[in-house]
Length: 126
Image (cartoon, rainbow, N blue to C red):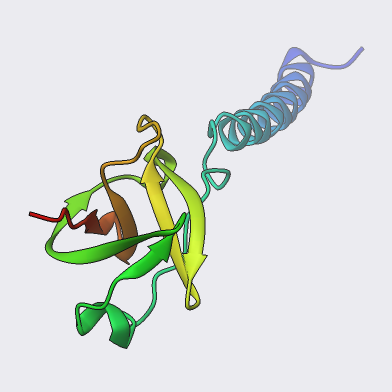
């Protein structure tokens, strides 16, 4: 008959291995669960930013959008890309409108930097 000390050691080793294996399984499971719980990370659309604004913008020249001239303003607004709607393109530059804006638009935008959009406005005849 085996002695109690031998049986106790054998059970402790097996129990320790089982606990180690369970810890590993639950650890991997929690890491995998955290990876999938990231919401929409990586799925939010981001518009590209030019290294420098187009010359025509810096020179104050208008953009032709929907048969009207829109002039750049010396001001920007802060928006998330998800708040903007890509509405057109002029001379290779993307033109945006605020997603909550409706026609006739009051403002038009070009992307100036991360979350920065240059304002364009129509000039009225006085």
